[in-house]
Image (cartoon, rainbow, N blue to C red; front, side, top):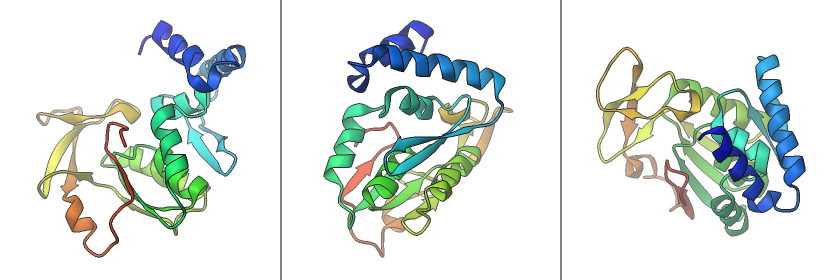
Length: 197
C-alpha cells in the first residue's frame, strides 16, 4: 500500500471518522518512532488487551492507526464470540485476532502461524496478554494434506507461500485442520489466512 492509499485508508476508517487529525498524528508519530527507535512498542489494543508492534508489521500498525485495522471482521468477532467459545485463527500472523478473541473476549483460541519469526511475535503477544492458558499456538500452516511448503523469508509480517525454493524462502510444516481438532469441540468461529471470518 502506497503512502496516499495508507493515508486515505486511515482517514476514512470508521473508527477515525470523527478523529482524522488524531489518526494522522498517530501515523506520523509511528513513522518517526519506527525510524528512530529500533525496539517494538507495546500499546493498548483494546481496554482488555495489548499488542506489541514494530517496524514492518503492517497489519499490527494498522491497528495502531485505526483501533481495529479490519474493522468489520474484528468488530464481528468482538460481538459474536463468547468466553466459552473456541476460535480458530489460521494465518495468525502476530496474533491480532487471537488477542481480541482470547484477551478481550476470553474465548479459547487455536492459532496457526507457519513463519517462525512471525510465530515468535505471536508468542510474545500471547505472553504479554497472559493468555497462554487460553491459546494453543502452532508454528505450522494448514492445508489439505500433511506436507511442507516454501514461504518467503524477507518480507516481515507480509511473507507468503512461494511456488519454489530459493535463497529467499524457508520450508514450513503444513498440517490438516481436522487432525488438530480431533479431540476438541467444534469451533464457533474460524478466520482464514486472508483475515476473513
